[in-house]
View (cartoon, rainbow, N blue to C red):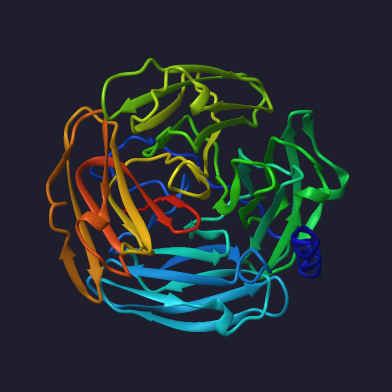
Length: 477
């Protein structure tokens, strides 16, 4: 019944199409360069505009009202700057006309918006235009499967990549497309599954109308596939793409909802700060090579205790490969770890981590997360909660050659509050550390700023009573 309702709602929201100028996001210049070496590249992943910026634009994609899946959606805007930000949020629904809403975000404060206050739609996108920089924005979807958090991106692209995906009997997968521009876009979808590469005619030359959101249910195109990697490429135009993935629990060991932003570019380096293998907590790394050359990839494991030999993986052209950490002898059980993925022959790939949590683990739900393609000294997390209902963690990995010293600050209604016990914390070279916020504070709203004297990668993980939400932060220039 959930699948049938889902398909009806999606089909009701499909919109027709046309043409716009083609553009492509640039690949990272140097994904390991520290902030002090110059501005962070905004093509690889969400990066906030600097304080000197006269304006900034963010693109959000998410689910709003899906029966039995999502019943509450929020846009959380965090202003890390010392001056107020003013602007406009333009909602682009899957049904109906765009709606403009003015927004003001005071200094060092977060504002929470509810799209349902002005929209009646199953899906929506939002373009947030502000009169300055140093903002970070996330879309939060809540429902019976738990919560899923997706960062709002700071750039569009003509191609988006998804390494992970499944359309098995227990799964629903959908690609959500946002065209924030005043002219049409035309896109093609192609897939790599366990049966090889395909580009079905049914998803060729799909039109995405101006200022609209369109949803493609992959279950109707690549049916009953355990492994689905997806490329969405614009023949004309540029856009933003996200993926909704559901496992309904009918297969033991996986149940939950994940909404995740695609990768606007392939890369030669991906970092995942969090990793932990115990019974009931299943960790998978999915490698996707959309190019025409074989990729040779090395996975370095940074353990909290001890050392592990790297994993060497070969991914054929237009191919994919999955490593299940629970079945890999070189990944010790019960020892937290980070993973740094590098293409040793320079062929760029896309890498995602999927975590399924179920008993006997105390955690539950599904989280699919892109790795980070860059390191930075400052990271922002707009959403967050650390109290009796949500167990929130911050995980920091330092892949550099010098120790990093990290400060964690809560931006509470204009007042920066240094988190006691999380000031000047050392993360050694080539090490990762995880910090449970509930051991240091108890707050319903926890917008965070994480600062380091060395470039690091920071991830926020939230474990409510139902579900799992894991996401890399928004890097700040």
